[in-house]
Amino acid sequence: MAKIQIPQAGQPLDVSYISEMASALNDLQSLVSPNQSKYLTIDTSQSGTQTAMGKNSRFIGGYVEIKPGTVTGGEGIPFTYSFSSAEFKYPPIVTATVVNKGNTVAGKDTYVILYPASTSKVDGVVKFDSTGNVIVGVNLIIIGITN
Image (cartoon, rainbow, N blue to C red; front, side, top):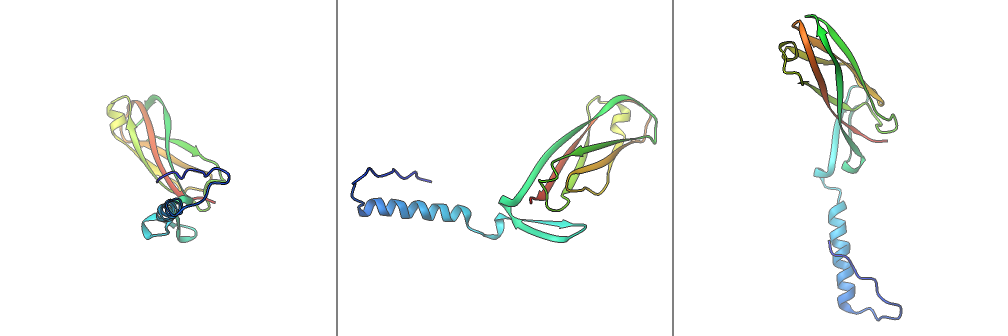
């Protein structure tokens, strides 16, 4: 988008200057136009489907380190990822994946269980199906509508 030069005091406003202002306003309007592609729709478990303009959405890429050590098959290690309760109007959508940082057998044989997110945190458990040493983390993608 072109930047309009500010006129000097007493400078006459000619047609080209007014044309430049109109073009800049049209460019601005197209950037903030409320078309369908600029909306975010979230299906919330508590409030049903909610839609908001993209500017009213928040995306968080989170990471939680699970303390390394030896685990037993069937064991679960809980984790919590917190964010500001002022960020989300409704509980956000959260997805999680395990990162096997130690490249161990027990680290490969894992999965994540998430509990329903609130507007301020998400809790989960990393479950291990094999016994052995682990060094794992959890990548989180959190998408929601802001207050």
